[in-house]
Length: 417
Ligand code: FES
Ligand SMILES: [Fe+2]
Image: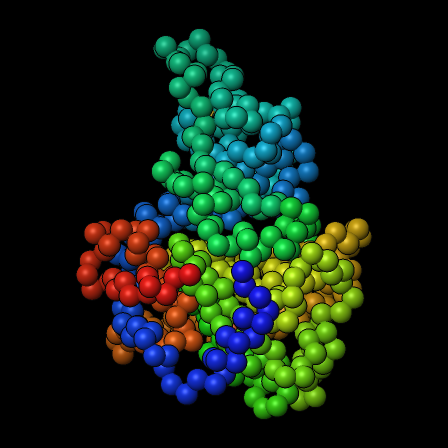
């Protein structure tokens, strides 16, 4: 059982280290083409996204039985999630007649607990069974029992809904491995959906994912906020402790700088404040996330920096080889107001200030990565969560499908906790 003392020792070790940790494997270069080649992008679409559990929504977005939400995070995978009497179902948003779109809105509630195709009004129940076909006399031998909507796997973790397109997928809890035991303390069954927003970003989805898996860029990209150099810097990236978990998941523990008070301190130089006051605490949260900036990655594309008074899920979706959509979805204790309370607005504004620093910089990475100068990526020990995720990408795609020049060599297995 991990204690706060163990963790403090690990932080102290990382701070005191004077070189590359003895026994830790050399991280081979990652081929640049993983970020720019149509070939690798197609492999991701065909295997990675089709075989992974993907966050698709939260129960609060479904006020009643028959409420639905469109999932369009992955090209070629239009899906709807519907609330049923017993939970949630996920279907391709594709009619069994001529492929019409079942629902065109992103969110809504269907009438009479029936999904009706917009094209010729074939009607399905919330389990996807085909019930009604207008002018059915004109079909020759139509077997309605074989023409239901095509289902995907759909499971929940707390109030969060995940989908998986693969029939062979392991159950969600098994897939999540070490994460539920770490994140349960956030009372995830009872958290409320607070708000969400999205950015279109001109870079490969992995450029985003990589940036949120390391703290090495804080002193440069975030010098205007949490990474301000000098004694008033909010965090001490030198003490970072990373845990690599099975299935590509990971955790990042980043110590606050000695004496920095996230709820109170405002930078004299930049005026930056974390905006952490005035929001209900999640009482069940243990000491680790209270004493360290703690973040988790759920492979492949979800990262969450968890704060004891509410936190966002950050989701990175491919919209093209060199474009992506970045969703930010906030959760916290129910606040009971119609409007977003002022304290929440301040917290989100402070967080978005940090995000803007990343989002202003990262598209330029894609531009330069497409130059002939960029052949491969060299990663350091502080960037090992990136390497860990890339190894898992290849394991999920299947190395046999990946040309050798595009592969990430597998070296980290002995360091997975
Ligand atoms: S395509 Fe859906 S009813 Fe014709
Ligand atoms: Fe960043």
